[in-house]
Image 1 (cartoon, rainbow, N blue to C red):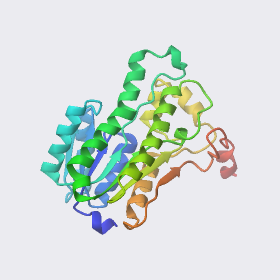
Image 2: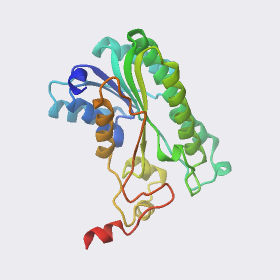
Image 3: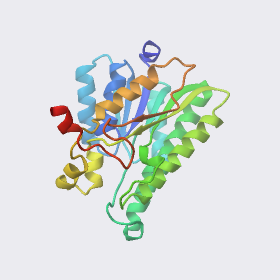
Image 4: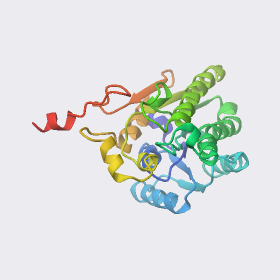
Length: 269
């Protein structure tokens, strides 16, 4: 599949840092041209510079937008197709988890709207536009929705009501979209990360480094590159094979609620 994707176009949301940046670099390594979407122009420029330096044959374009705005995302998709060609791979990676450890009714409505807008509406707007303007007319492409292991099981701590509901919705959307795209060669897949060291989780705990360290105490969490490798694996299957859903978690994370915090100590002996 890698040779088939070389020279084709991928669109990645939330591409300015963390998992999105790592996925964009992995797609460029596969020879794909990449459209990088996020809100921060400066951060997108930095990611583009890395790609251009490392993979000079690859085209990388940046599109600093807020995917919560349907008109913006639709105009951007039109621009991507005009500048880079039809979109062969869409990675819906952008996501937010805000307000922990506040309980649902303690959250400002603005945070609820922001999470719903990015995690649900933004994904649907982007997918709607890419399908209409590129994938459905060609009857081909791969959509990877970056969900979470929390989409299937409620986290055991406060502050996750909206995020958990968002990811549960994304799981349902992915399954329904896979069914509705029958009659085409479009694959609709879900990638479910477990615990990952990233800005996303730092933001989740309100940039409290001690809370972050406590969350990851005793074991080795994933890094963004682990998820990028998972995306490469999902894309490397032949067109007749779909990795419908892939859970990528630290080995120490035995389930959502059980983490082996003796992992590091045991491996050190």
